[in-house]
Length: 303
Image (cartoon, rainbow, N blue to C red; front, side, top):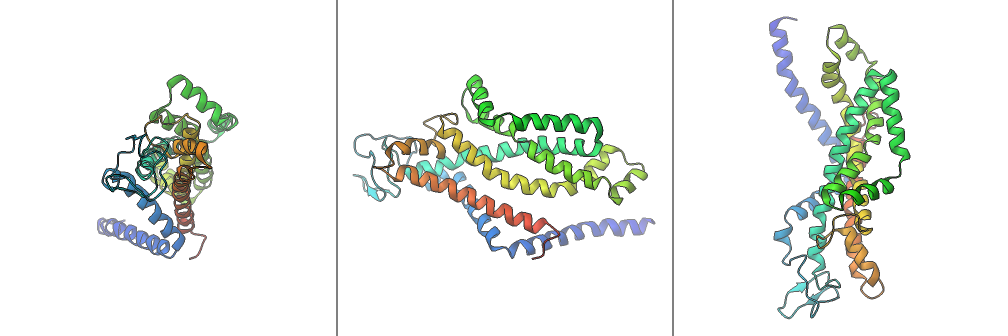
């Protein structure tokens, strides 16, 4: 290839990438459920980030005298409205629901990043090199799957103590297997493709082939799995907080609020209802967006 032809090819690469992004956005814009899910996720993220602005109340401020177990729509002596009512300690429930989005999203994002990176690296190495390396890594994955997650969580949290960092570490380290298997299956197919064989024939090393040629093509299924897995992680975080193994009081968490509200389910239904709805709406939004992302990125599906 001449110098001029190579320069033209390099100049056309950004244009081709922009065209691919436009096609992707056009396909995604036709999926209303995916857009609805994305809107829900964006709204939850904005709510969590802007919690001090959106909430007029302190989520941990207690008032056992005048504000205990007040129904939704209650106005206190100062005329301030409590749209979702108050809990058994006189804390504003709306403020706690808003602030409860912070640990849920933080655990969901951080744990998915940790498990996704570990799974990506494991799947790339296992699928590309195969043989004994593949056998060892996949047997480790089988052992991980055979180990009960709740038992692992209880053991680790019992030693290190319940905290946000501990939950992120436990979920992140224990959830890499699904990423590893998805990426491995993609790599097993990609390593036999013509462009990979051509790169090897031209003298490219294994590291360059993995990073430049295989990784970008294996990233699509990984991204879809990561999006859907975030919803699962949020549910797990809520379950651990419900069991008392998550972020400890007085920090508001949706699972911890559910645990508090189950005692008053017959007399103060709002204590468990609104945190439960927050979990439902957030997980539903992430799942809808993940499904739409999967359908959009799959070239075998037509819009």
